[in-house]
Image (cartoon, rainbow, N blue to C red; front, side):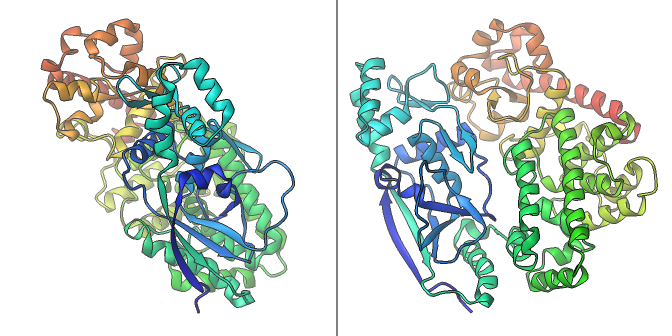
Length: 559
């Protein structure tokens, strides 16, 4: 039975979308992701808009029904409840980015602040930068193009000679960009049966029309089904998930990871969790099993939250990973969550350093080697059962989990060849972004602006030999240019300010200890284009040496 009565296709100018507050009437269903874009993602979106490149379609759903969710952005003052609600099915990241531009890089969603570093336009070379020191804030340019008098006056004061052309070149071009919008409309009142089917149908539509079949998936629909079956516990689950996100940074861990974990604590196998045809039956069985046992079910949610909280604290504090873009797969968190859950761990202080090191070591190697890159359900289920079978043991079952990896022909360590045999594009292989992040953090490296290197949004992947510099010297192969040995992680601001400078020009301006902690060869003769490949080889060796040292310090079983 379909709940969609009509599908409308339209185009809406950005000036109308953000200038007349249409965008502020939109809502996010709870199954939507949190905002996870970084400043560089917004810069690339703006660059695409300026060049009139397609940025994808936007999918909305109009209905009179109210589903668990939140406004895209908080609106000051009282608003009458609209009879028809419009939910964002796809496009939340892009729409939030556009709101940030309109609202000077800061908005609120359910009283929580979402911010971004400003994107600036440099008229001299017609380029965009994530920096407040170069060029003109594009937020001012867009608002001036929309007729904002205050923005126009600020531009006159700060950039009297450049602002008029910049408003035309950037502000007006962005304001005149057309957004392609699909609107799924449900005009009739939904019956109780249709309400249960609605979220699943919208997810199926999302799957078919968006990104070549990327799945929203029934895992992310968990809350909708759970809320229907256990309305009195909906708030507990939502509050649990959101408190983790608020504490640990945007969709980290994801709904999918938490759903797999929570369901496993309700004695469901991973295969059954992810099968659409058995999903609703499973919810009914849980409802039957826990009838009259609301407190028992609430304890499962609370225990799951506490376990995840402990492990996320370790991932932050021991590895410097604060965002999902530094992890090949968040599924590697699930066995750690499960171990803390079955051991009733509620504080990091309950875990000995030896056990913690084993946990970190397994997580690091399993993530790097993409243990859950395929056979996801089978492998997660086997590891969960291993942990449950060893729950009476004192420590973390590292040996047994490594044996599970061997049975799947997955390497149980990081080998020298993993770092030296080929070029590894850091933007196409998250394992190497994670490797660098963890090594730099545990090596005490700073982001060259005084803060520790972490995956927090204020830091960026930096090309030691800048891409444009290599291009000018006829080194153009993207894989070679983006090789992980040419990458480190520093402040987004400093990365933008370095720009296209040659390493031989900017590296000498930094303390040698900074460079050493970033595993950058200190021989200046290697800092020129003619020695680029020698530089990569020398840095690979430094990274390999640091990797061996770290693994040996965590557990002898990992080397």
